[in-house]
Length: 187
Ligand SMILES: O=P(O)(O)OC[C@H]1O[C@H](OP(=O)(O)OP(=O)(O)O)[C@H](O)[C@@H]1O
Ligand SMILES: Nc1nc2[nH]cnc2c(=O)[nH]1
Image (cartoon, rainbow, N blue to C red; front, top):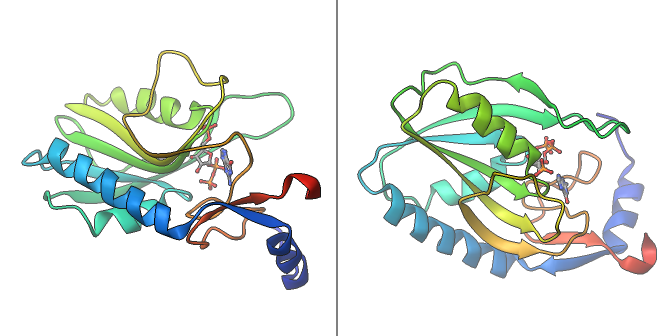
């Protein structure tokens, strides 16, 4: 992960526009938590955070959950080469048994859906009772994977490269409490 100078990051921030405010994001976490609380009441699931991006949405959502759950994480990233590879780079697979368990994955964004689809396919081999997924953002476009959809979505976002709320800009800016993108005239 290459370091970028503070000046460069500040320039990025000056060239950024806010697409979704921190207030809208906070409202989305509350709506999502209300849906999850209804859906998982009494089911005692395992909540799996998809690192890195899922860290902040999970941290925000978990404090609103009213059902009892255990928390764990997986770390998988998409290979992003120029050859259009759709494989996942598994950095950490869960070391707990999920057989016979309800599993809820939490991630930041459902973009093309390759990450969540691959994770669900892989974890399904272990025969969980159910495996569902929840994201803060769904990116609106027609390049989604087929035969798979995310179960719980906070907010739809435009088809742009976004950062904040767990999502990075060259490894930085995951901590921003709203959702940002580079202004169209600065790209
Ligand atoms: O729906 P997709 O098109 O598969 O993209 C979504 C995935 O991309 C990002 O992860 P990334 O691999 O960049 O790693 P990160 O979580 O460490 O940022 C994000 O956190 C999602 O997991
Ligand atoms: N930071 C970031 N990561 C992504 N992964 C897939 N789509 C995106 C995006 O728009 N922003």
